[in-house]
Image 1 (tube, rainbow, N blue to C red):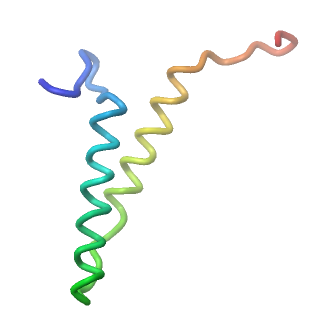
Image 2: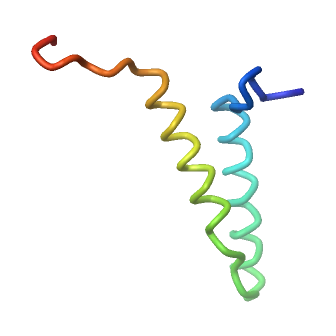
Length: 65
């Protein structure tokens, strides 16, 4: 399964590709004067990217730099 880890998480490149696709769709709608699709999918993908970043960085223990 492309872009998916064994634990069900997707990789950064896959998420970013989806974000670019959604941005292109919104741009096309805007150019044609149509009603813009909801940004909820984009919000979800951005949340997913944030979560990936949190997992990649270990939490700092108080007192350790």
